[in-house]
Amino acid sequence: MRLSRNVVLLGTVSLLADISSDMVMPLLPAFVVTLGAGAAYIGVIEGAAEGTAALFKYVSGRWADRVRRLLPLAVAGYALAALARPFLAVSQRPWQVLAVRNVDRIGKGIRTSPRDKLLAASAPRERLAEAYAFHRGMDHAGAAIGPFVAAGLLLVWPEQIRRVFLFAAIPGALAVLALLAVHETAQLTPRAEAGGQAKGGVPRRLLAAIALFTLGNSTDALLLLRAGTIGVPTAQLPLLWASLHLVRALLSWPMGRIADRLGRQRTLISGWLWYALCYAGFALARAPAHAWALFAAYGLVAALTEGTERALVADAAPPETRGRALGIYNLVTGAGLLAASVLAGQVWEHVSPAAALLLGAALAFAASALLALRPHPARQAPAA
Image (tube, rainbow, N blue to C red; front, side):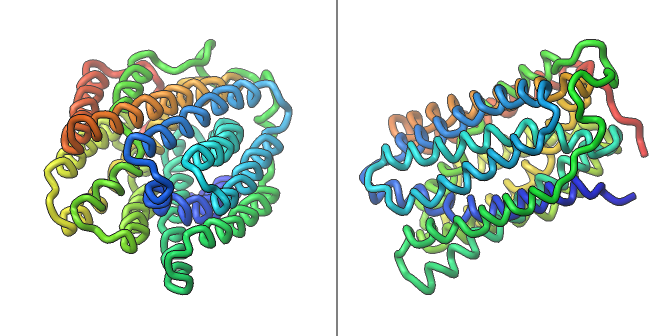
């Protein structure tokens, strides 16, 4: 059975948007350092950006349950991010990078919950994890391609990071154009018939476990910084970032199908335990080869967890409150990322990088234990 047209188109939009975003992301930590900031400020930039996105994801989730059409919200969000990103090219101070990243993430916040609700309406319930995982896989494919494009531009114009930031506007604009081809379905009218539970929401144990995990899931920018501290040259960081997302792109869709068939909760617990092992590995790494192996292994985490988490949340709520449920989930994960990034940055600078990474591993293990205590009440899809 093929994926629906909307699922494929929304995946294409994310592919293009992430090519744009990840032409920038691998270079951002080194760029911020050249402006005079360090690990703690990088943590603040990324944490604040994701916290801002989380707030707007919640607000846009509430909007998504009230408006007649979701597409205008999604278009506005993608367009705002595409317009903001090139302004990094003229940033001269760390606070300016912080401002641009926040505007970029406001766009992400506006688009995410409406887009996720549209995805849920475009796939049958028993294939929700597959649909979300396919979308995340396309997202990661863009994140793998973006650094290669950035690396190619840097070969043509060595050390011209600002020029790469300008060129990132092109795939961002193409993403907005591709989004205009998406069609909404009749299921997306406000106050539609409930399709499951009388009251929509996210199971508290699931939310608590996700929040605990996210508290240890700091920005991946710190992993790039860790790679640099153990000997990976700055010029290779975009390729290292690309390898991470290549693994995610290749494994996300297959892992989503497995989650729908073997159980979403068990898949999520497995992903969190694998995260704990990877972060412990990053803490103990001592050579560039370790970084390359760990980034490849770390790619499996997203394949096991990202689509699965969203499917569990979407399946817990009926269509007319699904936007709110996804908004709450996005708020929890974004706020947790804000706290995690600031906390990890502080521990990194004032204790050690290994301590910050081991803290993330411990919290992931604790979240796995919490979720495993008993099955959550969300409905599980039948085996295919």
